[in-house]
Length: 228
Image (tube, rainbow, N blue to C red; front, side, top):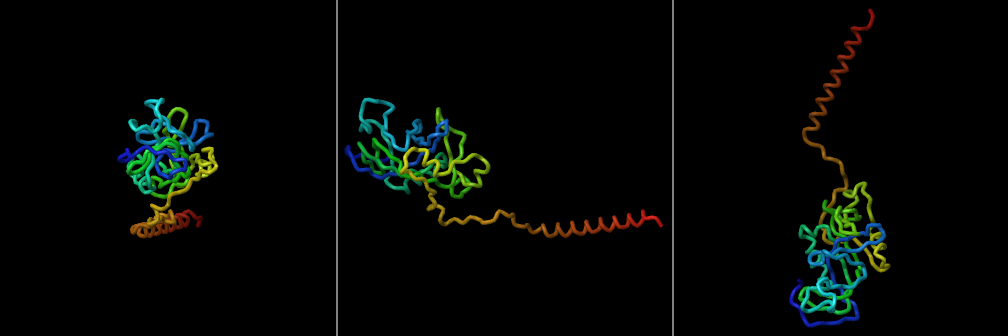
């Protein structure tokens, strides 16, 4: 839940909110969408979609006596906070436009209609900014779950760019970006070379002496075998 509920409201103008979700792609690779978390983890929804009640399809959504409806938080920082929980580490942050019937809560909204405006990828498991989507290995009937990774961790696996993910949602206005703000104080090494250890110089010197001794022995053997 997202705090104490207020009176029922209706909005024709979109209200901005933020939430987290698991990115998914259809089994045929033609469509991208999102899987909810928490109470909404059983449902996959599109970039533009209407909320449904899985408990009672006859009442309006959201209903005051039910937990149905889309959920969002008022601020992006509140949505970012949710990604710190281990089970949410691989989610993305969504900026959404909420409209239709809604109920205002202390921390966010519960509402009927949703359009995803922006998808924000966070950090890769290695700590770098995530750049690409790869198959996470999870999924549900008809949908494969994706996870955002940096280029280094993605390696040679098939990848989907952020722009391609956005295009496959079917909404030309949706954009996908990297959320670099939480990483602004971190530094990333620009080289992958392994620093030399203190004992390496000694080992190299000993190997040089051994090689020189071997060369000397080869010369002596050749002198002994040379006809007089």
